[in-house]
Image 1 (cartoon, rainbow, N blue to C red):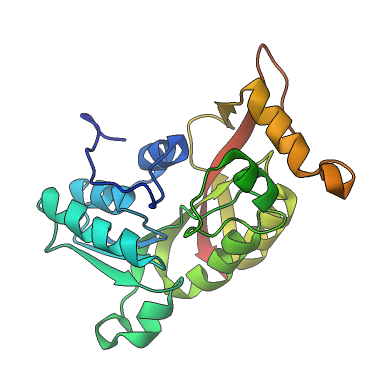
Image 2 (cartoon, rainbow, N blue to C red; image 1 turned 45 degrees about the horizontal axis):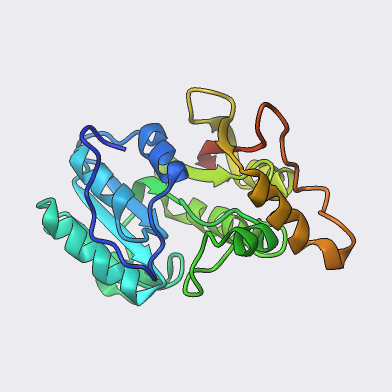
Length: 240
């Protein structure tokens, strides 16, 4: 994510930064002086990256108390406690609840929230029981993010969000993004990024849907020299 990589305090029960987090760190563009909201901050990697890139203020939000505790410790570790404030809550609720946040608008919103269908996420053990998945089709959290983020962006601001193209109903997410924003573009240097799956992973995913008559159409495991799935990081601007 950075050079050198961040060294963060972690916990077995916390969501750990993963390859998607690394790609987010490369894709998100933060200018010196920006105000950044990091929704679903986890233990704080992208909030810290924004601070290191020159953001004047970073507001990090997460529903899990353990994540918030670790995010504060990690921000302090990198000397950013004065610029990164961490709030426990769902989505943008702290902006409605806390007087000091009610009028604050963002230049950049980072939404590295779960976009993985529940069956896949649970089969592969990607989330602890404290971390919500993307719901039955992997769209729930991202649709909520898209619906609420538009009201918190300054003119010219940008929302960054993921789409697990092969592990969620990506078409539904893209349709919602187009409805809420004038422009939606690929924020990464390639159209897709690829993540390998082991043969055991494929068996686990298929097994998760055995009782449902097979994998749903939105789960598409790509075949190559080894199985993989594709994802994207998109940038949305011009809230409607």
